[in-house]
Image 1 (tube, rainbow, N blue to C red):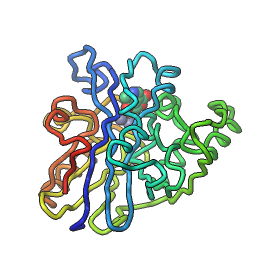
Image 2: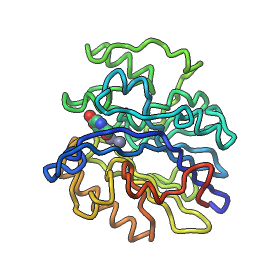
Image 3: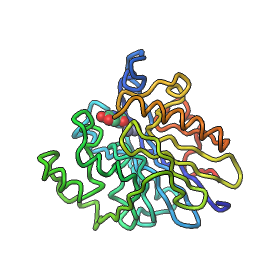
Length: 273
Ligand code: 5PN
Ligand code: ZN
Ligand code: ZN
């Protein structure tokens, strides 16, 4: 914990309508928001929490989200800027398996892949309204097979960029301390098995990464959930849980897709420690 550094890796941006961001609240209108990954450089390993979106996937499947991503904003590009390669990452942790959180998983050829057991199950047989969210299954050759077998999404061709990507999954349940001072807290509702992450650091308040359990500070302040969700009631309960965790640990909250808050975040190559 005393040697832990946290880097925020910028992953570019996407556009949705504000009515999706603030469900049944609005006002409507385009909003461009950031996507980023969190690298926890820890004595027990190099953990990456979420891996952003894949530009080509979004252009193919959701071009209306108008992705903007430079080569420096891809996982290999962002890691290179701090002297790392994707193969240096020991663990990938996914808050959940929406396309804008797992698009870069396949670069991490040496990592163990952690997620909630329910999330892994959910993405193989999503509800019809979740299919776009779970549209990038490049993180798991196994899930690609399972989806194809169910007549769902077609199997994607092996990706030449993926090298010999053969992920080893560790499926978790309940709250977990995955390394000293690095906690995953169950925050379901947005998806079936969503995790938020809290990291304790030596020289500052703990950092609480909401994932998509809360997109922005405005969502939290107004207790309004996003329209993308599995269970709205559970989503709201998870926002309340995040508030309680922030109080309990005196943590600073880092939102997943908040353009305003993002301006105040320290981005790699700078880091929190
Ligand atoms: C950014 C974004 N766009 C589309 C979807 C979706 O269909 O489920 C989740 C989601 C997103 O976070
Ligand atoms: Zn999501
Ligand atoms: Zn998201």
